[in-house]
Image 1: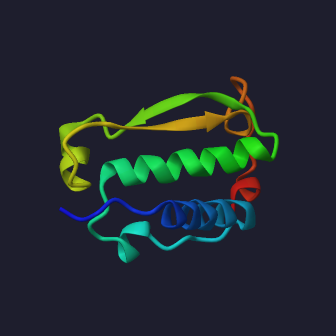
Image 2 (image 1 turned 60 degrees about the horizontal axis):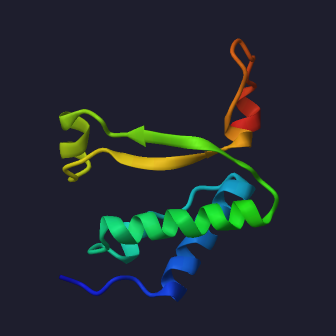
Length: 104
């Protein structure tokens, strides 16, 4: 088993994700640099990324769950569903028309 990622590595990876989202550019996969990272590491990166968003004034709106089917879990080589956060800017009222250019 490999050692957990350091706080510096966690912060760096969160910063990479944050920059990619803010500049609408693709981020490299974290696992391409840390192929043996754990799910705990991934959730620590996610928490650090959320902290960056909250520090900028974004508001936590909820949580989400994904990879609920066994087929998708197998494809991602995990054995349980995963979870994440939703900030207020990710939530839209019913029947809202979304403009694709706002997300590319």
